Image 1 (cartoon, rainbow, N blue to C red):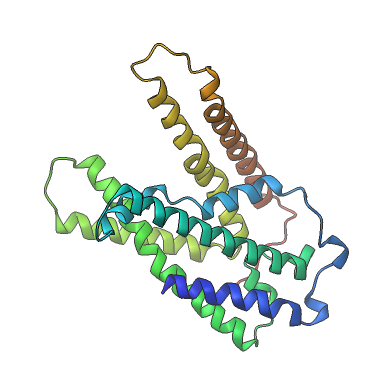
Image 2: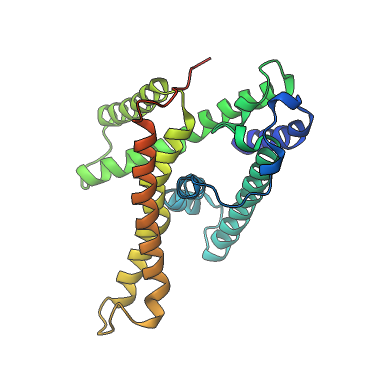
Length: 255
């Protein structure tokens, strides 16, 4: 369901963008600009789309015949499809709306557009079907961390699930600006999960039980990834908070 919804959203934006009213389109002279002031926040948001490390064990265990070769094949195919979807969505959206591009690209379209309204429903279904997968991982992590040696407890299971879903719902109702949410989660969490922690774990494993220095040439890529992730995390989080707390900022209005 989530995959079909994603395909519907991508095709709706790609095919519907060029046909929107000229008044809704952005400045055409900005179509081929490469770098703008929000590039650091954008890196965090894009990183958020590719953070799936926490689902790896669940995906591996769900394979009919779980082998490393099959897991690698699934990983490469799914990552490739994600890259393709992101490129099609970003290019088709920005080339049409440029400086008027909203954080939620579907908000750039008229409210009475039938195809886009179907895409909006698909977007909701996508979130509806994706949230449980994220919730399962978080719930399992919390339960394993605090009660590593205990058996399954239904009361604890229900409490964790209710709290996680309830907190997520309250946060979603608290703000109408999807851009700020994606920038904060992308800058603070996704940068750490996508760049800092994987590279740091690789560095720790590569130097464990050895006398080699962490500054050896073969570790430079890992060190560079860690510093890059830290830079994106700090700068993006600071800029996002500054933007969100700016008293002169015009708040988004929920419709």
